[in-house]
Structures are given as C-alpha cells and as structure tokens.
Image 1 (cartoon, helix red, strand yellow):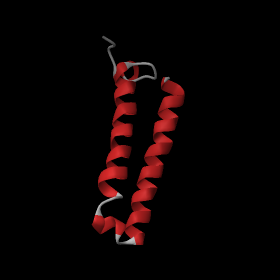
Image 2 (cartoon, helix red, strand yellow):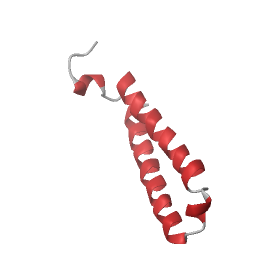
Image 3 (cartoon, rainbow, N blue to C red):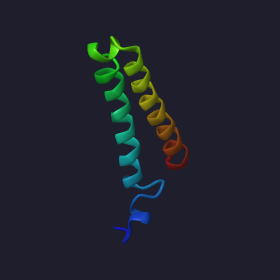
Image 4 (cartoon, one colour):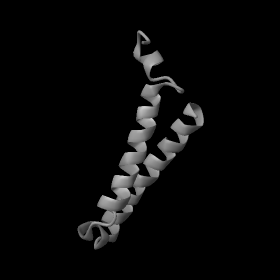
Length: 69
C-alpha cells in the first residue's frame, strides 16, 4: 500500500477511482433526486442553480476521467 495520499489517490489508483465514482454518484443524485424534486422544478432560479451544480460535477468527472482512465 502506498505511504502517502499523493500516491494513494493518484490517477490510476483505487483512491482516484473512488473520487470518479463519487462524482458520478453525486451527479446522478442531483439529476434524479434534486432537479426532479417538485420544490426545485417549480422554481426556475433554484433549478438553474441545481443545473450549475450538475454541470460543475460533470466537468469534474471529465477532468478526473481524462487523467485516471
């Protein structure tokens, strides 16, 4: 097992894969549980903010994936 976090979480490691997976999980949660929630869907400003969060996570997922995979 690597001795430090830089090695444990470097691209290609299981730790990095965990980060990729968690990003995907949070994207799905925002998409299905938050943006589709009636309270959010009823307020265009709230939905737009949730969409920004989803977009930021999408960008993060792509960035991690480019280096990890």
